[in-house]
View 1 (cartoon, rainbow, N blue to C red):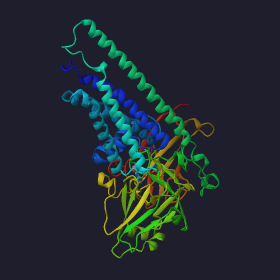
View 2 (view 1 turned 135 degrees about the vertical axis):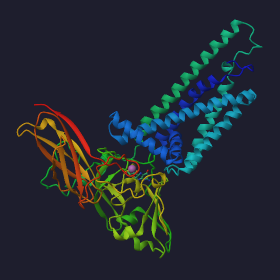
View 3 (view 1 turned 90 degrees about the horizontal axis):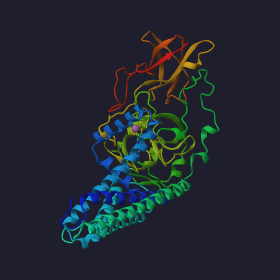
Amino acid sequence: MTPLSGKPGIALGALTGFLLSVPLLAVFYAGWQMAGLSFAPFVFFNWMVQVLPGGIITFGIDTIVNIIRFLNLGETDKAAKITEQFMAATSFLITCIIVNTGYFGIMYFIERKFSVVVGLVLGSLMGLGILFFSHSIQKVNPINSFIDGLWIMSVFLIWGLALGWVYRHPALSSPDAATTTSEELLSVKKVNRRRFLIKAGSAVAVISLSGVILGRIVGNRNKPGTLNNKKFWSSFNPLPNASALVKPIPGTRAEYTPVNQHYRIDINTIPPVLIEEKWRLKISGFVEQQLSLTLNDLRSYEPLHQFITLSCISNPIAGDLIGTTRWTGVSLQRLLPKLRLRPNATHLKIRSADGFYESVALDEIRSDERVMLTYAWDGAPLTTEHGFPLRIYIPNVYGMKQPKWIESIEVTDHWEEGYWVSRGWDKYARMKATAVIDTIAVDNMTGKRMIQIGGIAHAGTRGISKVEVQVDGGKWEEAKLRTPLSNQTWVIWRYEWPFQKGKHNFTVRCTDGKGIPQIIEKAPPHPGGASGLHTLSRILRG
Ligand SMILES: Nc1nc2c(c(=O)[nH]1)N[C@H]1C(S)=C(S)[C@@H](COP(=O)(O)O)O[C@H]1N2
Ligand SMILES: [Mo]
């Protein structure tokens, strides 16, 4: 379409929108990687995630987890984060292209000489929008929020400026019916436009590539203390069940999960980075006096060490969103006298740097010393991904009730729904008993010709009293149980079955420490955690 006014059309709006938003993305990426400044696409995406209704998000998470498992894309949590980051970048790009096209539309009605002014107005609106999102999701960055704000605004203003300038560029204007006198002039115009677009495209490529390359190089150098230089407890100490007689079948998942292999699930595209020196645990509400504790204050209490299996409620049967390590912290029971609670206090509302929250009953804390403010995993301070500097441990419930990156505790006189409960997940989120086959050691059958089957069973803090295996729908046979790391962790089991040629189905089930069998009925993770039996088929050849 050729506007009569000679103004560039909508299609050019979309094209230049693409050309302008790619470097925008790259510049934000460089700022994030090099200086820890806000990456606008993630701010935008995280805000959308928090604002959209829980049902849509839950559906989104389930879909992503299912696709990843279906396509066998590797570790669910890592693949999910990458998918999420990809979605964030794409939706940002698309939004920018739409805005850009909209601008070309608006300019239809506005004199061309105002193009830069309108571009700047649009840029500042975009910048303010991102600032607003970043403020409302309480993203905490080490960087000074004034500098961050300045950065976001400047980048968007420059973007707006570029937009206005590009719009006005003579090469983009359409041949005007009145001024186009000959075919020749028209083709000169076309050539000019093509030249301009090629030049602009090259500029975009250069800016974008340098942004990404700079970001990568400098970003990798700036990465804060990676895992290898940390002192992990397990590198120097034997596990408490090291001498247990029942050994795992090779191929069973590691009984003790290395911290860098522990699954990670949270609502953040990039985790909040808190600085120990600046961080305080603020305690307010129904207390005689408000408190502000440092991490060292918490470390000065006698530490409690607990071997714990944590599982995400989104973990499907036989999924990998579950892990076991040694948690260290201060029992909340021990801390209570220090809080000087008022008589009407009944609950603690725990709030995190990312806007996540959960409330815990004081009754539960008083009756269970295991409820713990945790500051170390495997003997080292929590990593950024896993909630540095402080997270909570609440026995027997899924991870959705256990905030990481805790910043404050408000003492209240009532129960409140936690973050995921108010988004449609189970109120209690009590861990369900599940048993999983990790390995059927088919090629390990020389010698005695026994098929070795092994895996884990888990029932929160209720423990596991029995695991049984069934082959081809036959009799349920008891597996051997390995002494667990603690009664708060999963249990490793093993079972041997005399070799028989052909295709066979292996099914496993468990009974918790209280003698209650696991739920056999299949249920998806939403809303109360997955249930059902795990079955694997193998073809055994002689
Ligand atoms: N602040 C905060 N804490 C959080 C979450 C979150 O999104 N934000 N996610 C929860 C969920 S759903 C799970 S499964 C666990 C996962 O802990 P991990 O990532 O250390 O394994 O953290 C929990 N704590
Ligand atoms: Mo979770």
